[in-house]
Length: 185
Image 1 (cartoon, helix red, strand yellow):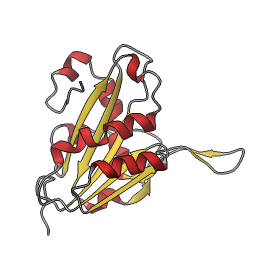
Image 2: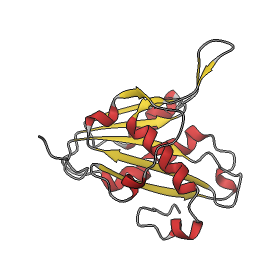
Image 3: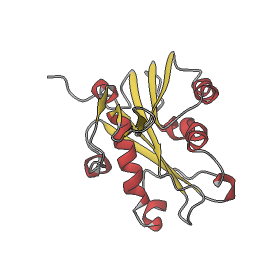
């Protein structure tokens, strides 16, 4: 049996990004999350139920997972699309996980990411040999009438979505003193 490779030792890391979808709608602001795993199985696309998973095991330092988050507040972010919010914060949130042994990163986003945003993200990781950027949407049109709900995405995206929701429902004071919080200037 192969042991867990910690994100600080792995040559390949898998990142899932999501945000709380509340930019400009309330005082708390937008919570942007990155979840990282060194397990290739967390990068496989699969169907998940249309509900959020309990992420206590992630928040308590569960195995191969780690995460960081930031909170975006103020009018500056009020009119940002979720794809812009995620693209602008991808490098900022992944910096704590970048190390010398790292050769490949796979960045998976919840929601649409435009081609130019993917290029913008890739360009920020110029020191890494292989950078893959992809995105997944939870609601998919089957035809002009029907929509399929329920995520079909890598596990890191599914967990990032659940984590963003969990953090959003945490009191702001706890978030601001949380060890995984990275303040955005």
